[in-house]
Image 1 (cartoon, rainbow, N blue to C red):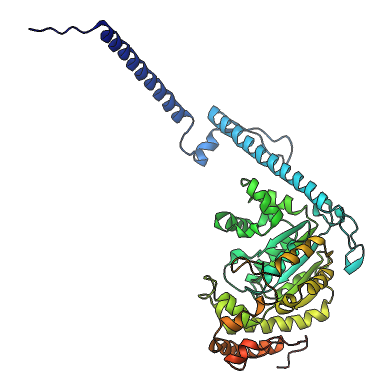
Image 2 (cartoon, rainbow, N blue to C red; image 1 turned 90 degrees about the vertical axis):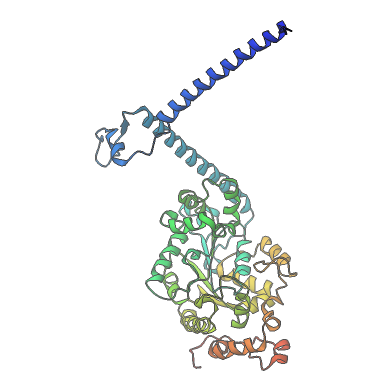
Length: 440
């Protein structure tokens, strides 16, 4: 019989392997026990309100209306309480730092600004007089229109002005509706009032809508969105947005879901100093543009020509009254007129709003009115051609249907009728109009 002898080196190696294996097992057992204790004592199930109250001890408040001090018997609750306060302190510190940074940016932007100092009915001659956190009153500029009427273009012109806070479509969370009367108009006006005053504490629905999946609530607001990208944790915190908004001397807003008549509430409030421009567009151009938006064709308030043109008639009648009652704070412009002469009409609009025609605005017009760049929502356009794409994109049968439904509205607002398919391609759709009592 042959006997194999195990070399001494192999026996020694086996011994060391056994020791190593035993060490690993002991380490795993110890780690498992430690982790179990952590789970048991740190990651406990959610505590019910009744159970939480049983762990609390309230001290008497030292004086009436003072907040009582809360102490916990459980060390874990004290740990959690300290952690929550630490997180809150970090949040407040971050808000304060971002606000201070933006304050310095605005100071820099406004160094050489030409203040109205009495011109255009605005008497401010220094920054503090226009800043809410300094008890000043901002210049508040409003565009009121409807979907696909050129408001993105005009809104971005206003937003190119230095130190501007842009309230982009503040009723976006209301959905694809046109708001014409109470009770919905009351809710809408309350929202607008809060935004004009930079009070976001009551706008949780609006902020939640943006935070959930609709970043365009904020991303057209150049200054705000820049900080949101860097500070995502505080972006949708109403405390941050309120403080941030109150830094800005200029506040612009574009509204596409509210008709003109309810806005008289703000024209009557002299203390806010709101100035409103009603932006009108040819209904053929509006409906051609809406045709390419997937959210529109299934919505009656968006794609029905009769509904659109009834709103245009209602807005015309309100505009006739407002132009007489509020000549210094209400104005009308057609998108076609603005597009054909963007420099001249922008300068007039800025005087109406009480804004300086700043070099930044000039630069925006230089770069956004010459060439078509980007998609459907781009504001880089050949502005002289943009309002009239419908002449080639719509069949005459579509145009004729719109003209029949919109006969009165088109006559009131100064739009010529296409006679046939050939005429449609080459005629000038725009003629003069005047605001007078509706006799059609």
